[in-house]
Amino acid sequence: MLKHIFFILFLTFFIPLHCQAELVDRIVAKVNDDVITLSELNEEGEGTIEKIRENAPSDQIRSSIRQAKKDILNALIDRMLISQKAKISRLSVSNEDLDATISRILEQNQISKEQFLKQLQAMGMTEAQYRDKMKNQMLQSKLINYEIRSKIVITDEKIRRYYDESFGQQESSDGYHLLQIGCTWGTDGRSETSLDARKRAEQLHAMISEGENFKEIAKAYSDLPSAADGGDIGVFKEEELASYMRDAIQGLYPGQISEIIESSTAFQFFKILSSREGNVIQQAPFETVKEEIRTLLYEQELRENFDKWVKQLREEAFIEELL
Image (tube, rainbow, N blue to C red; front, side, top):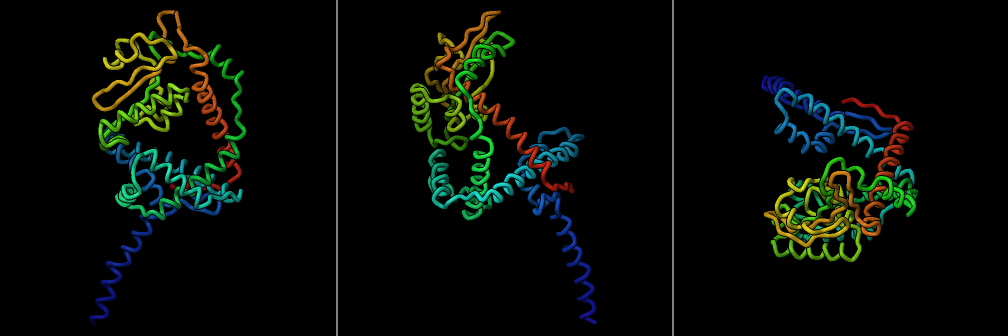
């Protein structure tokens, strides 16, 4: 009798839990011979979905999350297609290359190996898992270098044509088109103290002054959100500028770089690409913006060619979305 009761309890409590686990983690996409699971989708979109729950109007949360999951799933499919293509292409990444890349990441972020491991632990990731993920990213990057980047050529003639025909013309209103680099300190920056942030800013300012590409330096080393756009913060009218920005660029001409100034959260400096007042547009001298234009044209062509390439990968693949 006791055995019979125990068996019933087992069926009541354990089997439904097992079924529920299967429902929680199911396949949401098939990509050739690989699959993407719901748990992978949720893990990838955790931050995005949390922001939607916090910020979206209550009546739009469900639809916004649904659309976000579709977008994230498409990104995961693209990433899986690239990973599959990399394996087929027999590309490889040596342990030495992997170690060098990780060391470079630690150096750029100015953190020790011990700090790095603590951050991984806080994220619930082991060093082996991180290395595996990084290796996969490096394989994909190698493939993209071979398939796309190596075939893009931005000639001096293209740069000159863009400068003569388009550079500075996109400003539809009076103002200054600015690039920005900033070094913060504390938990949000790569420097622990304001003194460290000041030293970093001075190093970056010196690199730019010696002819380094402002946009590339901003992307790699600036702590500000504008880093994602190569430091480009767009066009500002003089009255729209914060007082410290206005003071920094006062008296400068397009092409010139400001001195380092301290705001409440960062040490910053700026470069004026162009300015406009009425119908008069002042452009930075060609040589002072040549490399920024090269980067801009390269990124435009890279984005266009990448989109075409991924579209072709999708057309040649078997993809079934089950979200």
